[in-house]
Amino acid sequence: MKKWMKKEIEVLRKQYGKITRQQIAIKLGRTKRSIDNKINNLGIAKGIGWTEQEIMYLKLFYSEKNKAKLMKLINKSWFTIIAKARSLGLSFQRLTIEQRFWKCVDKKSNDECWNWTGQKNEKGYGQLKIKYKYISTHRLSYELFVGDISSGLCVCHHCDNPSCVNPKHLWLGTISENNEDMVNKGRNKFLIGEQHPSSKITEKQAKIIKELLEQNTSPTVISRKMKVSRRIIYHIKYGETWKHI
Ligand SMILES: [Zn+2]
Image (cartoon, rainbow, N blue to C red; front, side):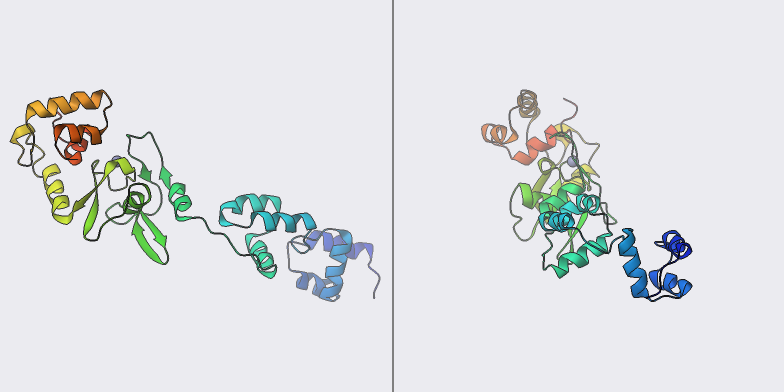
């Protein structure tokens, strides 16, 4: 093998990482193998060799959740890391649906809206791709934190904010209830209190409900006590109805 000249080593150090090893080989009139060997000998190899510690990190933390951490611990590209993991037969742990959900939620206090910060559809509803299919994130939130959505029912917003995924702002209604709700909030928004066509309670009841809410009584308890639906209570709680009293 041809002895390495000082000048050649200088070129190698300067060019390595800027142009491909193949190009360096051509430039120096050497084989690619000889370039690779020299790079290793000089200890300037990047992304080629794996130390035992790097492999240990890979085995310990190989998951989507730890992507940033791994890239910091192992100074290699994500592509290189994936390729190595595959060659070691490691399986990739993806984030759970719940972890993916929380990554895109601007979580605030219990009563405020929690806006979706990820992808949204044209109507403003958050979208998350799960198993090749987009699903609405307010519906996902309801399923994760409240319960199943029976077929034919829709998840509606007390707060009228399509991007909100706070489970406390969501209620389960039929399509006609949802339409009725939208009409009440829209077309009839100037009618107040008992004049409102959907008013199912009297002003006196509404006042009592408001007082109980102010005392932090839970809507479920109030609903049982007053024998009115939780939806009505939530509408009052979020200031959609009976604002004037
Ligand atoms: Zn909300």
